[in-house]
Image (cartoon, rainbow, N blue to C red):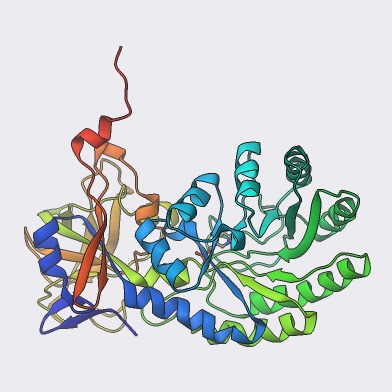
Length: 424
Ligand SMILES: *Cc1c(COP(=O)(O)O)cnc(C)c1O
C-alpha cells in the first residue's frame, strides 16, 4: 500500500489533502499515516508469526508519543537506546516488561531506571557494562536479564555511518570475547543470560546479511546452551530497508524466509527491532517555496524546510524523493527519470550551511514562491533528529487516520527556543 498518493493532481495522505493541512497549520509540517504505520508493522507480525516474535519498534527512528501509542495499541513492543526513550515508552502507556535496551554507553542511572521498569533484557555491548548491570542489580536486590550483543563481522554494505555489525566499529563484541563474558554471567546470581543480539546496520536491502547472521546465531546458541545457559532469544535487530527511490524495499516476508528457519532450528523465540521499515515510508515533510533563484548556471528552490528539520541528506548523503504537492508534471514511478516539462534544480533550505539541501541536481516540475513541496520517506530519522540550529523552532507533527487527523506535536514557538536559558 501507499498512503501518500496523488489524486486529481494533488497529494493526499490517506483521505486528507496535504494542501489543506499545510494551509491550516503552516510549514514545515510532518504528516504521518496511521494506516501505513500499521500496515508496515502488520507485515512483520504476519511474516514472522511462526516463531512467535516480539517486534520491538525501534524508538529512535521516530519517538513522538503519538507514534509510540499507535505501535503500542497494535501490539508492538519497543527497543530503546537511552533512559529518555524508556521514559517515552512509559509515557505512551506501554508495558515496559517487553522492552529491550541497547546502546554502548548506558549509565548507572539508566540501568537502575530500566531495572525498575523490569525490562525484558539489556543488550550488553561490553564487559564494563555487564559489570555495571551486575552491580546495580545487586544493589537493588534484582536480577538483570541480558543478551550479549555480538559483532558478527558481517558487512551489510550500508553507508559508513550506518553500518554496525562489522569488526572495528563501536557496537557489540567479537564472538570470542562474548564467550568469555557468558562464562562470567554464569557465576553471578544477579545476572541471567537469556539471549544473543545482533544489529547489522541500516538500511539493508538484501537478505544475505540476515541469513549469515542467523546461521551464526544457531552455532552460538548451541555453544552457550552446552555451557549451561538457558538461551531463549535470538534478537536480529533492525535494519530492513525501505523504498526511497522507487520500490526497492523488500517485503518483510523475504527477510522472514531466511530468518524463520534458523530461529526454528535453534529452538528460540525471535526478537526484531525494526524502526525505519515501520516509520520511514509512513511520513512526509511538507515545506513551502520561499524564493527561487538562478545563480552560477543553476536553479535553486529555496524552501522553508531545512537540515535542522531533516538532517539525513546532510549527515548521510541520503536520497529523498521531492515533488510538488500540486505538480505541473505527474511524479514518475522512478526517481531517476526526468519527464518532459522538468528542469534540473537544487532544493535547499534557509540554514547557513552548504550541506543544507534536500535534493541536488534533480529534475523537477516548475515551482514558484508559495508552492508546496513534499519530501517523501521522511518518517524515520526525520523529526526525531531535528534541532533548533539557526534558532529555528521545531516543526509541527500530524497523524492522519482515514479522513481524520490530529496534531501529535505542536509547533515550537520563539519563546520555546529560549525557555531553558538563563541570563544573569
Ligand atoms: C537503530 C537501531 C535499530 C533500528 O534500525 P532500523 O534501520 O531503523 O530498523 C535497531 N536496533 C538497534 C540496536 C539500533 O541501534
